[in-house]
Length: 449
Image (cartoon, rainbow, N blue to C red; front, side):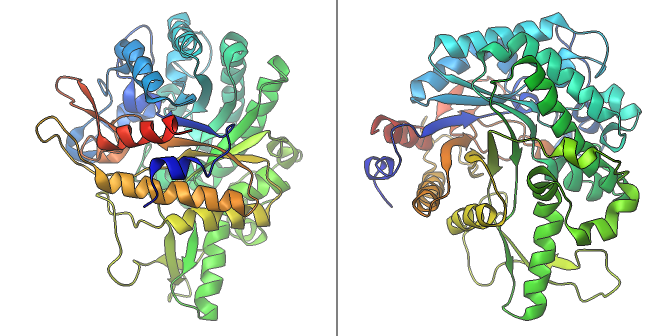
């Protein structure tokens, strides 16, 4: 493992280091100051959906503790903070009447970042769809894209003057695949037609959002955050290699294609287009020139050919890696080379703008021992993945920054509070924050620059 000083030397002075969070995972205050309900408020109250019925009603109480949390971020020595804006705080019903108290909160938060010399990197949508919109079909309904554009215009008009960059949507794969096809996240559907409709609505929403933001503030750097997967064939057989490529197109190309090439992969269209309601002009709307894009990476996938010839596209099955490989406490394989390989692959396939690693981190559930949280495994993970980013840069990939996931332990969606990704430990009963060894390591690396 490289020393923090040696690792820091691999990045130029203008490389941006930050930390990341998301609104529903940390804010709490679910019923305060006019906030509306989201699909996650409803989903987490449904029996059996979230571990032990955990929910985000309190989370990390960041809504009330934001000032001390911003002090903590500043004291780490990072240059930027990536967070999300809660749509239901701004428009409780997703459309219509604006909740000024919600905008006031983000006004204070952004001013607090600026006052502390931190760059402001918000995301407009990190999964908390207003529940009222879900009643009209949510992401499966075409006009949700227009509602998202209206929300974008309201936010940028009020807050955009202090933003350093803005992301439209966080992780379309989770919003569509995980939530409408596999049923693991809100709204918990397992419906292939609904999934296909959601994919196209979400892609349109991104394009319309970029247009809306630029109509208000043309110089605001716009991007999107994608959780692409590094996909390896389980064996080197032609069958598994083809399965790997189909899996790539189904999980990655379904977003990268329309966003950056103005076209869905042909095999995806053959399988799903009947449910996507693609109309004239849609692909031009989706393919907006972007100033940057964000990659969220945690673990690779390994796939083999699906033996059932009647199986749905992509006819590829995920398989565990061979041998004794390291995994995190959530069960994800640790493979730093997957990050550098993926960056090089994506920038080889598509004409992409500058890239930021907008999330990368590891789940290790270490608890305090005599007041100290020695999460050495997280340090090892981060060291390897920082090295992978540097390797990708050395290979010519324009990676401009890295946001560590996450600033603090938080509500980990369907896993509730049992999985901890933070470099800051949160005692959910007392809300006390304690820096883990990984936070001190990150601080040392940043100071070495």
